[in-house]
Image 1 (tube, rainbow, N blue to C red):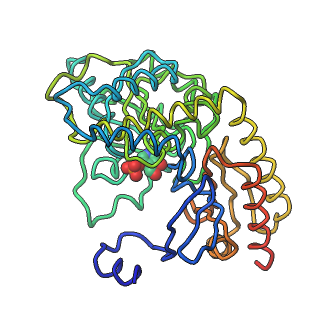
Image 2: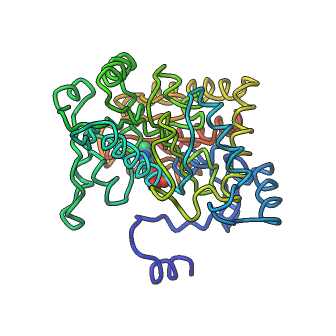
Length: 393
Ligand SMILES: Cc1ncc(COP(=O)(O)O)c(C=O)c1O
């Protein structure tokens, strides 16, 4: 029934598995036949504090029992508390705008950059440089900002002007011209293959951009909210971006997008907005998520989970060298390069049959984005099932 309804009434934009998942406990999911699955995906890096998290559920329940939504025409207490928390955890002198998704946060970032280019220079600067293998979202502008050429299908053209792409950080210097206002990067390219950028290259670029009054936008939609071990990957890379975007894990499953910027006075009323962005529901939930993540970072359990997961993935990689060519990623954002696309597809489907959910990134990367609260027992069981899944490939 699920499959029939879905196929008839939902637009066909995803290649779906029709399992009916009805319950979750931390990194374990259950289907309607009571089969259990270890979740190494957390809903593509979203359910950072695990499924069925009681603290988040209570925070949401208490909030929506009172007020779910007013509008941004009134102050929203949990929004201001979340903004304070996110800014404090970031360590940067910034302020926030609230949206509902990663793409929408990136749209906001690009608008801030464009306004900066308009206000600060006699001859308007507007061009944004990104990387060829990048992914920044699915709206018409963020599709254009995403460097992967497969994203720029003719069917959706024409696209907005003012975007160009470079193969690597080192190539960016040559493509900057008098109209370039910003460079936008992911520090670990997620959809592009779980590929971390080189720290020194990023730091050199950040210094160069600052010197030349060009903004650095870091898309932390996937890397943010402790995914790489620090609150932001920018903290790990020891840089100070001008604009940072977050979504996914910072909401723990509730839709939210955040733009942080040090250019606090650039936008004025009427410049930007969002009906749902920053409402009572999403900000109360996200505040609880941030509190939970902050405490597992402080008490050392996040670092211990990262170490344990990495020990397991390292031995899985070593045990199965015939399938994999590289072990990549940072923190709990990990990938194993698979020798070919067919093998990758077999691993993902065998893993599902064995009771463990894993992801693909592109055509050749097996991707792992487990909840940050995953237990050692869940990690053990997940990798045991993965070993079984690949035994006959
Ligand atoms: C780095 C990055 N930016 C932006 C997005 C788009 O986020 P959303 O799907 O919430 O719009 C994604 C989603 O995968 C992402 O990984």
